[in-house]
Amino acid sequence: MSDNPAYQDILVAIHADNPSHTAWYGFGSFFRESNSFSDIDVLAVCADVERASAIRQEMATVCNDWPVHLLIMTESEVEETNFIQSQQCILLLKPNGKR
Image (cartoon, rainbow, N blue to C red; front, side):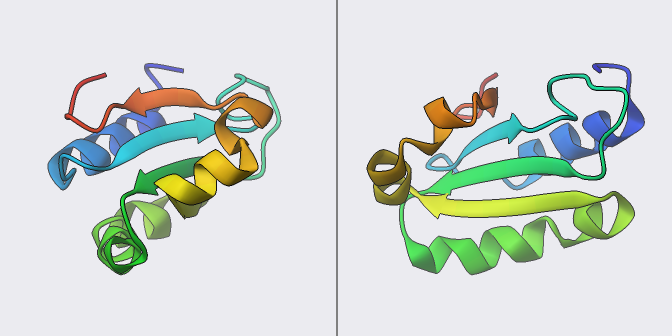
């Protein structure tokens, strides 16, 4: 997967505009390296709802270039739903900008 052009473009996009309080995850068939996938599921976890709009704008190009399904959740929503564990999300970028 690391040599996949879509994966590389996603990493570039999330590194380019990543504020210190956003964590990025991949999940679904693409990140399980399935041979068949219809989209690329990416999760952005931000501090509050106000940040979600900015994240959507920052990711617009990569979402238009690739079949990215961008899911944005607040930290409290992630805690309430246990989404990261239940979907076996793979960490792409920590909130401090490191992998």
